[in-house]
Length: 64
Picture (cartoon, rainbow, N blue to C red):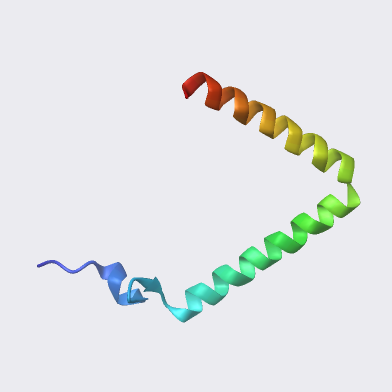
């Protein structure tokens, strides 16, 4: 049986601790940045969210 080399970097199918910590930090940083941008430009953020929702809805109804 050939073993996947990426398996050695995981424990029980989960990424090793260092990778997990890095991903959590990146997600936290992205979340903080998003909150900052929305706080500074709430109307622009609302407009973007509405436009995205409209486009996504159009795509889903055409292909659904």
